[in-house]
Structure formats: C-alpha cells, structure tokens
Image (tube, rainbow, N blue to C red; front, side):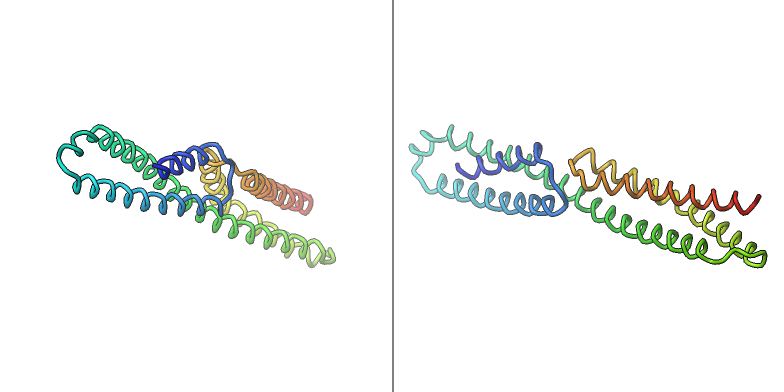
Length: 193
C-alpha cells in the first residue's frame, strides 16, 4: 500500500514544515486528492476481496482487515487535518483582507498627517490643524479595536503555522499604528501649548 506511506508522509510533513499561504492551499488540495485516491484504493481492495473464493478470503482476512483498518486510520487523520487546514485557510484569508484594510487605513492617516504638517503654520490655520489632528486621533481610536482583533486572529494562526512573513506583518502594522498615534498625540500637544 504505497498510498498509505504517501499520506502518512504528507501528514508528518505538515506537522514539521514552516509554510506560507500558498503552501497551505497546496497541502490542503494534496490531502483532498490523496484522500480520494485512498478511498478508491480501499474500495478496489474490498471489491477484490469480494471476488475471491471463500477459502482464499478466509486465509487473507487478517491482512485485509489490517489494511482496511490502517487505511481508515490514515483517512481519519487526513480528514481531521483537512478540516484544520480548511479552517486555517479561511482564517488566513480573513486576516489577509483585514491586513490590507488596516494597512490602507494607516497609509491614509499617514498621508493626512504629512499633508497637514506640510501646510504653513499661521494663526488662521492653527484651529484647522487642531481639528484635523483631533479627527485623526478619533479615527485611530476607533480603528484600535480592529487592529487588536487582527493581531489576536493572526497570532491564533501563528499557533498552528510557522510564518515569519506574517509575524513581520503583524509587528510592522502594530508599530505603524503606535507610531502614528504617537505622532498625532505629539502634534496635538504641540498645538495645545
């Protein structure tokens, strides 16, 4: 049963490999394909067993049972792993969408800060700048829960996969948020005095 060795090997690889999003999907589809092939092989084994005479069937019933049981064990393990991979892939897609939204939001805030800071400071523009920075501060506060939710979900994914790129994205996004929040607070304090 070469297929049993393949599925077992692939299952063990998943546990020890570090992978990224594409690898996750490739692994998921490989498992689905192998499970289908394994089911076909098991069905063929059962059909062959049904076609042989009674004495031969009795003689090899132990091996047939053992192969059937081993196949079922591997199918069960692969099925559980497919479910886990499916959940992880769905969570990862959600994380990716949230990451893109948050990154776009932070880039927008950053450009508004730069735009406001680049304007000439006069007595007339000071109230406008204070209003802009108050608005920016409020937007950052409102977006904080989305950032925390993103970080929490991404860290949850990192419990089941090893992905340095995702770790880097999480920390960069959090650092950018903190940096922008600090910049806005600093500007507000400066204008308040």
